[in-house]
Amino acid sequence: MITVCNESYSDFILLGFSEKPYLEKILFWVVLIFYCLTIAGNAVIILVSSKDPKLHIPMYFFLCNLSLLDLCFTSSCVPQMLVNFWGPKKTISYTGCAVQLYVFLWLGATECVLLVVMAVDRYVAVCHPLQYTVIMNPRICLQLAILAWGVGLLQSLVQSPATLQLPFCSHRRVDDIVCEVPALIQAASADTTYNEIQMSMASIVLLVVPLVIILASYGAVAKAVLRIKSAAGQKKAFSTCISHLLVVSLFYGTVTAVYLQPKSRYAQEQGKFLTLFYAVATPSLNPLIYTLRNKEVKGALIRLVRRTWDSQNN
Image (cartoon, rainbow, N blue to C red; front, side, top):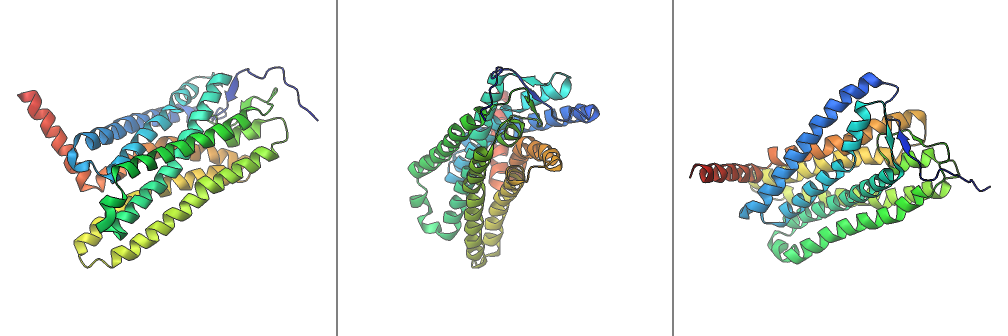
């Protein structure tokens, strides 16, 4: 049976936490604070990494990419989220929803690949230190970064149109805080088996496989670190790797729960909080994780502040 809809391009309604208006008022301020922290923290990392010559190495090149990615990722959904949390009007235009879906999916998939690239970089640095500069040369780093952004874009260009082509008819109430694939599939008024299979396959390729590669990389890194005779060397290697593993755990843990969880009312409600966490909280925590556990970044930040202070005084 073919479902025909006359209102193919009418507005969507992002329900969010509309049944709990008191919670939405609280979330408005929480999300706003985290968004400000995200902008400030990631902007500082990009500025420090680009200005300090000591940080012109592959690790910080990829960290700059991650910071830029997080800035764009949160900005693709938070402004609309804040508008919806603040007032009773929760509509988003079809075009706005489509743009949000394309960008949100693109950047989310890119982060999955970029975290794998960062894990591989740490593997080469720890397990093959003598060949590190040769293997991770500027050209290879640029190619790996382009690969990450390109794979994410390809994933979005494949899955977003398939999701938006679903008939929604009068069921334009999306039980989520952003226009993302699982919620739109659930809101569709037709058989979504193909879309669910497509989402599952994409989740395996972009979530499960990368996570296996990351864990395998850090398994090899752990063995190599334990063979280091210097306690100071072990501590430095573990400190850098633990920072990345924290970021991986925060992002993959929540995204996997959203895209691989079963369809149920409880799962959908839980998914909203998980989406909040990986779309709002995680991008603001990444700069803190990398700077608080990284003496090189803290040293570069201090040098930048001193140079700025001296130039203003002179």
